Amino acid sequence: MPRLFALFFGAVVRWGVTLVAGWFIGHGVISKELGDELVFGLMLSIPPLLWALWQKYKSRLGFLTALQLPAQASEDDVKVILKNTTQGEKMAVVAGKSLSQLMLCFVLLPLLLILQGCPFATNPQQAARSAEEQFAAYTDRIAEYVGRGMKFTEFLVDTQTIQPTVGASVNNILISINASDKQLIQASQKFIVVVDGKRVLRFTEDGRLELEKLADALATAATNVIKDPALVNIDPKARSQLLEILTPLQASAKSLLRLIQRAKTVTNGQTIEIELSYERYSIEDRGDHRLRLATI
Amino acid sequence: MNDTALRIAAIIAFGLQQFDEATQEEQARTGKSAAELLDTALDRTLANEELGTTLTKKFASLETPKS
Image 1 (cartoon, chains in turn blue, orange):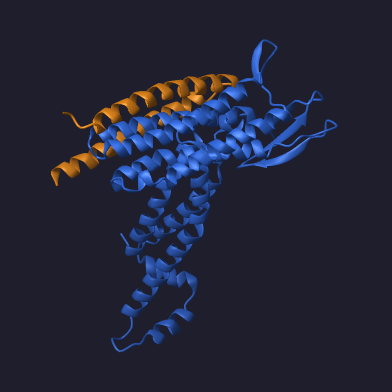
Image 2 (image 1 turned 135 degrees about the vertical axis):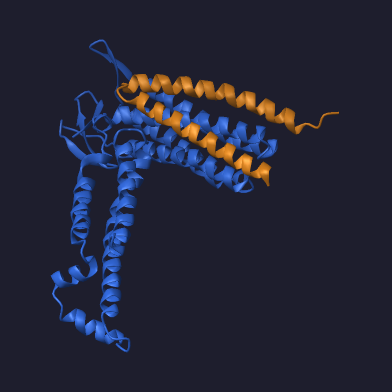
């Protein structure tokens, strides 16, 4: 196997693994916040990947060309030869007799690029959710993360990884986040109406203002937990695992707040499009001062 | 040293278990209406309240030196 093929293969495999992770996000296996971050990360990863492959190719080409020159040849001699060599000849030098394997890399690369363009990171069911459903899902996620945080804190105390006093502090923080979340959920439930026998969540403009205040308090509490001194002195491994739970909690609380803040009153039945995270939504005034958020 | 290694392994195993459960919860949310999601969320917060209270008592008892 040519050395360059091995170098390319390593880079391509690493990238492929990242794509698989993207697939999991796209199918709702990983939460949307984590998905958004990963998609952003993937977009950033393309230029460095191309640059790394190009550098590996150039370095291998220079090395192999130098091997063909007399021992006293300088780097400038290599550059002169490369300047006067066609791209096809250069590739033949690098690939040797296994040009097909090198070509395979060049086929694989655009293929992976095309695959990355596929809507892997968009869960069709999640994208089809209305803004109200997204809102409710965030409150549920926050509650879930709080529960996980509490169980993990208990585990850390049980295994004597942290002192009970530290556990009590973390537990108190989680209790206060839970209280904020509960308040927000109960306030939201007032806006559930029955339409055609189905329970539907429909916010009014007045309700939005009330919910915004509660969501703001929740986001602040979730942000403060990560900065809390109680977490500073915890065993680093335990802290890192705890942050794995608390970080998406914070992200959910912020997304929830953004969702409410971006909802605007629309008059005269006019439809206005708004940008909501990575998805687009429209808001309709239903004529009775009720707002309806829907995906476009 | 062995204790530390075991503890770290236990933390990682616990983390993986949590991740697996979180994955299932995320899938369970798919297809639920906003009203249903709020119902589930409220039930969770109530369960969290209970767990929080239990843990507060448990940690307090562990902090108190036994005479």
